[in-house]
Image (cartoon, rainbow, N blue to C red):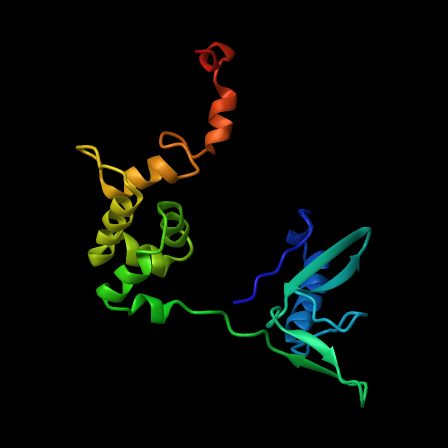
Amino acid sequence: MLKCTFDPSNQYDDPAFRYPVQEALDELMRSDSPQLTADGSVPAVRRRIVQTGNFTHYLTVPNEHPSKRARLDTESGDATVLSKKPALRVDGFVALPYDALAEIAWHFFLSDLISLASTSHALRRLFLSGPGRGVWALVRRKSGYVLPDGMSEISFALLMEGSHCQARPVPLFARAASLPSSAHQP
C-alpha cells in the first residue's frame, strides 16, 4: 500500500480544498512510469505541487521501485532501468552443521563473534539459541578467559569485549566521561 504525505494544514475538511488535492494525488499514484531526474536516476518519490486558493499543497508519493537506477544506453541515448544487485544471504552459513560452525568460530575473537551476532536476525538466532551457544564457550576458552559463577557465556563476552555499558545502552567511553573527576584519580 502506498503512503502519501500532505503538508500540515487543516484545509482538507473543506471539499473545495480536498477535491483538487485528491485528484492530483490519484493522478500521481496512477502514473506508474518512473520519472527520471536530470542525471538519469529514478527518484525515490514522485512530487506534485497543487494550488488551491491561497494554499499550496505539496504531495509526495513513493515510487514503486525506488531501489532501481537508470542507466543511459550510449548508442541510442535511451534510459533503461536496471535493478540493483541481489543482497548477500546468510542462509548457507546458518545451515552449516555444528562441527563446521565450530571450526569457523575457532578463528574468531569474542569481539568478532559479538559483531557477527549483531549483524542480522538470522545470525543472531544462530548464535543465541541451540547449538550456537556452545560457540561462545569455545571462543572464550581460546581467548583464555575464565567464566565467573552465575554469568552466562554471552553476558560475559559482552562484559569483556562489548562496546556498550551493561546497565545503560551507551558506549563505554561516554560512561567514563560522565563520571565525576574524583572517580578518575587513584
